[in-house]
Length: 260
Ligand code: COA
Image (cartoon, rainbow, N blue to C red; front, side, top):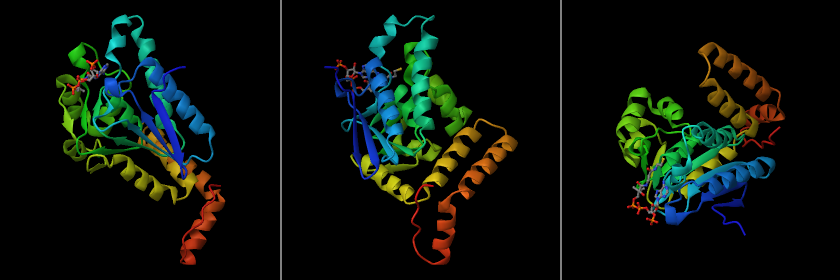
């Protein structure tokens, strides 16, 4: 039977996806990537799932990068396809049509940091360490890191992290906007669930459209981004939830959103 490196547990509409290869600090090998993609494909088909927490097993590591033992067999000719596969899977997580929160419970290095950056929001435990150590191996981040990191922290900081392999503590990650919250060791998953529960009480279509407008708008001009925002507003204003939200406010009661 194939070894399972990715586990998924669904409870009260929240799926907790755990990358579990603790002997290698949850490094992403080819099988793990395949299982991660399959897991998100299945969650995408499951209407009961309303949000996802992505984490690593244990308390030492979220994901310590791509599996370095696989690099020796990747040639310069193979590398673009090797990277494109990881990029495609991380893009899928980024574009997942419900919120995805990374609970970064330790090392988030290389592909681990890139995976966390593909999530909507990052919550770090106080022992988390972020970094892009690829240059130590004579390569560059290949699962989106050269693109997502400067978008999140600015090009100067991204270059410092990528060129010099500057490691970033949880508190420093908070300061530069790489993570949104820092919590005591062992509590990142619970905090992520708590935040998701808050988000899940809001209009689901509104959250979905906000995610689309932000994610896709980041790659557009301001003018095109605002056109996208207007069209996403159109989707929200066409829902029953819009009327329910306004009525609930006027009637001074909590809204009962239906997601349509
Ligand atoms: N790929 C493959 N194996 C990895 C790995 C990775 N990215 N990261 C850690 N491991 C393995 C180690 O080889 C070691 O295996 P072993 O017990 O069979 O020797 C095991 O995980 C534990 O790692 P170790 O280095 O002994 O732990 P540590 O606490 O001393 O150091 C790190 C932790 C994260 C600082 C260190 O493992 C590290 O630098 N990892 C590589 C990070 C990296 O460069 N990632 C980017 C890859 S592109």
